[in-house]
Amino acid sequence: MYAKCPKCGSESGGLEVCPKCGLIFAKYLKSVVGGAPVRAATPVAAEAEGFRLGQWLFAVPDGVNPTVVYVRAALLALIAAYGVHLAMMDIPSGEIWGSLMHYPIVPIHEFGHIVFMPFGEFMHNLGGTLFQVLLPLMFGAILIVKNRDPFAAAVMLWWSAIALIDAAPYVYDAYKPQHILLSGRTGDDGSHDFVDVLGELGLLNKAQPIGYGVRVVGAGMMAVALAWGAYVLWLQYRETRGSRPGTT
Image: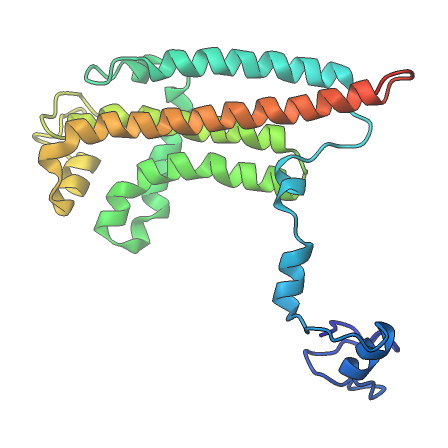
């Protein structure tokens, strides 16, 4: 009922009676509210009631700098245009693999294989693509929790979406491997993550439509990221307008 005793401040340890001063929390609470019936809440439920997800996802800092808002708006427009360009690239030819975004994704992908190696061969094969998508999301979570910066987190979600779109040609290629991989060979005579992953799942013959589906999911993630970032900037812009004399 109380994490700390309201009388002496000692930790309650989840008990109904203070272990230090002996205060009975139920009686104390009843006296405080004037005898009205009260339904006790568990610490978890009380914490859930106090938590407001919107305060994290749409946080607006005190004293918003208008210049920062305008620069971020320009960045959002830039990544929106670039993201649409990447999402429209040809999947069978792996056109996105010649883009600027692909080059930092490659070492992250390879490191992902190492990260997931202890979890068995299937996760080892899937781990490269999984890690390239998850790493930006981890950064985004840190930016929200530690920095209270949802716009930066939205950019990380955009990056994760691009990383997923980047994987679409790799999935597509698994059905009839043609692309030369880092090993210097194609999936026909060398290792290929999705030949192994989809083969184990019995979905190898559906690799091409799955590849297109991966791009659709990535494009949807990108749209959510851009909408989120735009809304956060709108809230911050309103804050700058409201902080000026004579504005509302």
